[in-house]
Image 1: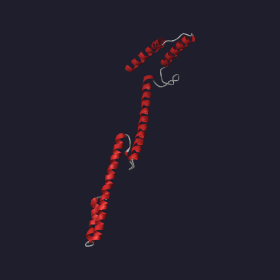
Image 2: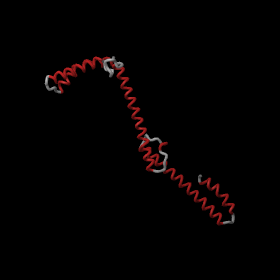
Image 3: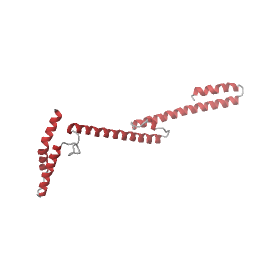
Length: 172
């Protein structure tokens, strides 16, 4: 109840007490106590609302409906838990969309996966990589050390023409 509603309830009773000073004093005291309680309750509500607002400021993804408490520590804990929960949902959705976009880009670039290629990479790319691997394995079997430069040159020789072709396809 608001202080005005409390006064409206008690003032007629105080007026009716008339000459009975003790009854009027008791009613006035009771009215003042209830008014003080209403101010105290609304002050506590404002404090709790401020605590929730601050918690939302620290944990912006927290949902306000998850903060149903009057205890500052519990409000903080619930805000953090809610924020982390929503953040995990957002991160999962972000990963799902990223995977879908990558899959779509792969389909647009290379076409759908073929029988010889589970990844959707063109058979030419798989063949080029297979050739590089075979050349490296042959050198290893001969017992020859393989330098990084040799690996780099083999990859460049095998994949550069393919990369040039894919780039031309994408441009054109």
